Every structure is written in structure tokens, then in C-alpha cells.
Length: 360
Image 1: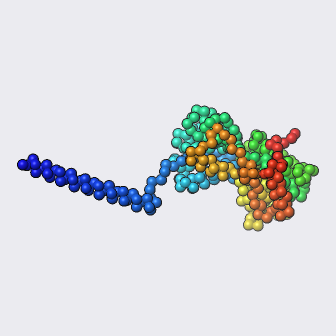
Image 2 (image 1 turned 30 degrees about the vertical axis):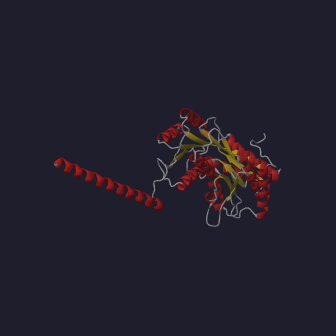
Image 3 (image 1 turned 90 degrees about the vertical axis):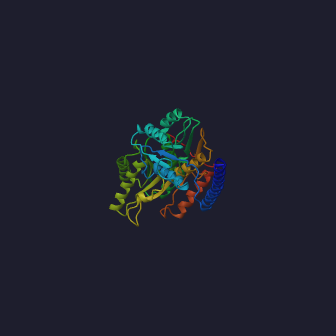
């Protein structure tokens, strides 16, 4: 009898537990629904990205900085934080840092790693070969690997417009080009600049100087000093952080003599702030913008959505809005801007094909 009573009691307890469990499950389900309606559900697993700079550094006011802005923009778009599982960068002080930095980011499990700059091609090719299951993006160079997307720009097209602006705005008939390392991507800048300048003034004198560095502002300053001293009044630089020295020289001259006709055309990013002397005086004529930031966001989103374009090369030119001139803030008059716009349309339509190398 006692056993029967115990059995009845146990049955009652189990029945009650089942009812309570069902109620609890219902309550939990209701809470989940409430949370879903309030936007508190757990987000999908983050797709993390990171980049390795070349020796110019992340704050070069140019190429690397533009790439980092793209990485940050992607992070903001997807509510990510800087660091593991989100977005980050590693800075390279020398060429020897490339391999090390790429491997460090892989060990931190970033889903997509960018190598910024032509000089990183060998490192990306080697690391990608050793890590076939990882995805990489290489800016400004090409390697053959199914897990690497190459990102190229038609710098010569944007530089052509810079050349038109320089030749039309020059009062001395002398303009200059300061390049960093003598490599194909910088050659494209030079070629476009020369071609554009000569298109509107065949007699224009163009001085050119390769500093052999992207991180030596002092070399940029020396090159600019020599050019301005010889009568050059507008310099276009494609030298990364070395170009900061070009700005320094121009600003010093303008500050010393407000009537001095010295200008700089910036590169990669809008370098208007780099040319600022005071609220009324600025030596930046315009800048040749290169959409590295937009390309970084575009490729990151493609990879996140399962559409990583590995084994291909994506090229951005005037037609794709990958290169263009920045707003001159009134430094370039309307009649000159009209000429620039006319050439822009001809290049974008294919009527004019800008060479990638200067004819010797």
C-alpha cells in the first residue's frame, strides 16, 4: 500500500514537473519572441577583416590611410569593434615586416586580410600559397592564386586630369612630378600626368624626381625645394608619406611670401588639410583621389556574403569612379574645370586611352 501511495505521489510530482516544464518552455519561448521584437537577438557571426600597411604607415595621409578608412567603414557598417573578431591593422616599418605581420593576422583568425601596396606582392603570394584556406586581397599588384583577389586602379587616368589642371593653372610653364619608388604603379601616375599636361600645353616643361622611398618626408622636401627654386609652380606627388615633405616645402614658401605662386596636387586621398597654412591660405590645388577605401569595403562585403572573387583582378578607373580629382574649393576656376571635365568624359568613354608608361 505504501508503495502504491509512493507511486501515486511520484506520478503526481512528475506530472507537475512536466506541466511546469511546459510552462517554463513557453515562458522561455515568449521571452525569445519578446527579445526578437526588441532587437536583442544574437547577431550572426561576425566576418572580420584586417590589413597590413606598407612602409608608408597607416597615417601617411595617402594610400595606406585610405585603405584603413575603408576597413573602419566596413567595421562601422557591420557594428564591429577594433581588435580580434572585428577589424584591425598592423603597420610595417620595413619590408621584413610583411611576412611577419600577415602571419600574425592569420593566427588571430581574421576572415580576410588585405596587403596594401605593390611592395607586398611577394609576401602575399608566399603566405597565400602556404595558407590556401585563407582569403587575401592585394592592392596595386597581381599574383596568381585562387585565394587572392587582386585590386588594381587606372592611376594614369586620374593623373591625366591632374596634368591637365597643372598645365592650365601654371603661370611659369614649369610643373613637377615627385614619385616614390620607381615601380609600375608610380610609373602610371607619372605617365598620366605627363600625357595630360602635354595634351593642353605641348610646350610645358615637366621636371620629374623619384625619391626611391614612400616614408621619407625629408626627401620629398628636398625634391620640392629644388623644383620650386628652378621656377616650377605646381608639383604633383605620388610618393606616400614622402609627399608630406612636398607640402611642407610649399607651405614654408607660401608662409614666407604670401604672393608666392606655389601649389601641390595631392594623391590617393583628399589632401586639402595637408596644404592648409591658415583659415584663408592653402597650397593644395586639388588631389587625385584613388578609391582604395571604397574598394576595401566592396571586396569585404563580397567576401562576407560568400562571393569572394578569388583568383581574379578587379580594376577601377574613371568609368568605374575608381579615380577622380577632389574638389578644389575654388582654387581651379570654372573655365579650367570645364576643360578637365571634357577630358574626363573622353577618357571614361574610351575615346582617349591613357598610356601606363612614359614614352622615353
